[in-house]
Image (cartoon, rainbow, N blue to C red):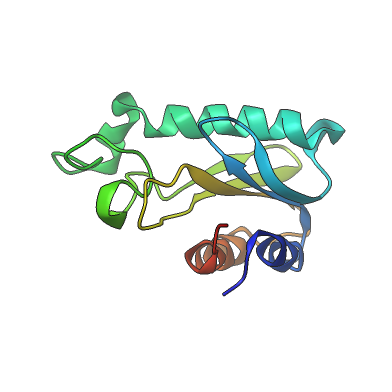
Length: 143
């Protein structure tokens, strides 16, 4: 089972990959990063994408997830108590020249981690990247 570094290198093998990182969405810190970062600053990108992740998991957005209690009994975020599925699995942000995929990592503890993949729009395959990122996040071992 791959760790953070191996997972990020795997993500960079995807067609059109420009950069990838594993981010804690509570602190906004990158736990690992590889490749380029939008604007050239991986830490600033981690903080900005963490803000998007927090917004996506707040109660106002959970109505889009469906169900009466999509966040679980305790209102936990991704990977909440007991390893429940997160209310939001991933986010896709589309720019004129790129895609940004944020995939929440589900763990048996209260995970606050997601994987961010930056893809070139002309060279990348969004559907393939989304599938591979989900597989990678499922195998990711933190620690």
